[in-house]
Length: 332
Image (cartoon, rainbow, N blue to C red; front, side, top):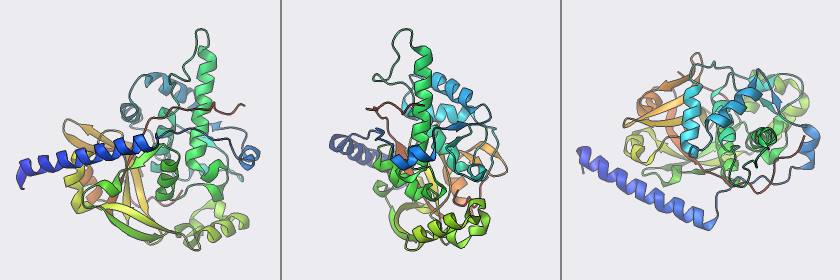
């Protein structure tokens, strides 16, 4: 098959296959981001989120603005509102101790995606919708859920510590999938490959990271990365045009790299608009931007060999939240 008709038929086949896969996944185990009890160590490490630069008010407004929208549309809608906000690297590395820090005024690419996903997962559902007269309490509960989702996404086992932070995107994605926040579509896209990657960039470049000056953290990261390898599913760049029909607004992309010790150098959201597939992302030197044409954009990033694609999934929480143009983006 060649030309427009061939591409259209291929897209139909891909979408049908993904639809069947997702339906089977939903029947087998509903993708719920239910929050399990917090580990005792996590409770001792951080009492709650630290909202900075007015982010508490921004989060409350975003929850209200996106109320009632489907998950994927809420993600893209909020991302569009944040276009123009500045890019800032290493914003989590401030202060001697790791804190559950939330800043919705400036981002690196990873935080942009992570906090958006946590935010839209925190909106009221039929199980958490406020009763009459409970508006203020419901707002506080939603903000508490937001902080808890960030904690679960950002840290292995939810324990707030630099050594437990999900520094590598493929590990972050795998943990998020286990918890029901998303589904990794990459292995099911036509032409996808698997690549064994050694992840040790932090250990080999400790001087880039302020927390790595602490002997405890340097030793902890070195031990964790001593034999850290992943089987990384990715879609080669040359196969990406044929897979565009299977993508939708709100999907998360990661740019897979050949840089030694790394898996992914940049991440963002996919926006499908007027038949075009674009990227919404926080880029060094540019802030939050829209890059028209995901394929062209990805091909222009140095050392990129392909992409990962993740699809966020809605959840139905069974537990309340606890009381009181880019280049080499390195691990956070």
